[in-house]
Image (cartoon, rainbow, N blue to C red; front, side):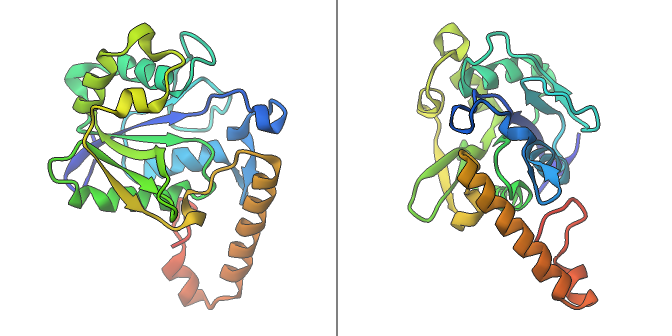
Amino acid sequence: MTTWAGAHLGAILLAGGRGSRVDGAAKPLFIVGGRTLLAEAAAAAATAGAHPITVVPHLQDAALPVTWLREPSPFGGPVAAIVAALDSWPVEADPEWTLLLACDLPRAVAAVETLCDALLRLAESDGACLTDESGRRQWLAAMYRTSALRRAAGDLPDHGRDLAMRALLAPLDLRSITAPDDLVHDVDTWDDLLEARRRASLAITTRQKRSPHERSATYSPAGGIG
């Protein structure tokens, strides 16, 4: 099992949802900056050394090095998906930390790098989530101690179906990691998608204008921009 900052790390990537604000489209399959949001999330987890990487629910993208998990009750919400993913992991092989990531972040690689850096400062807490500049917590861009997550999940009725994230996370002692808004800006609407593509295009154009030395210093092989 791979480690980050000396800690074992696994990942649960949430790729479900009805996509009601994008006419029912599968948001994780939207392409931004040359790859899907799902592929960006998988790259973020892989770059952090996460294993296992479990994606809920199953989407057709055989090229990704992940484990696919079908939801026992489709559209049961993120808490039910998290509980199902945890249930699929052998308890005796649990990673120390669980990266929880929604597959709608165009800059997931950079977001996860920020979370992993925070591991060094979490001490005895149960985890940390990214927070935008207004103070709004991003529960699905977070790192949680797996043992604490399992205990909280075990107390939920009906395997967490239709419950809010607060129902799962209320017992946990969590820290907030403030991040720039563009790092945690997700894709919820068609306008969000257009804006994400505009920003990605601008970042690529800016990178191409830099000298080769500058480009090598800021480009991550997994596709993240430093």
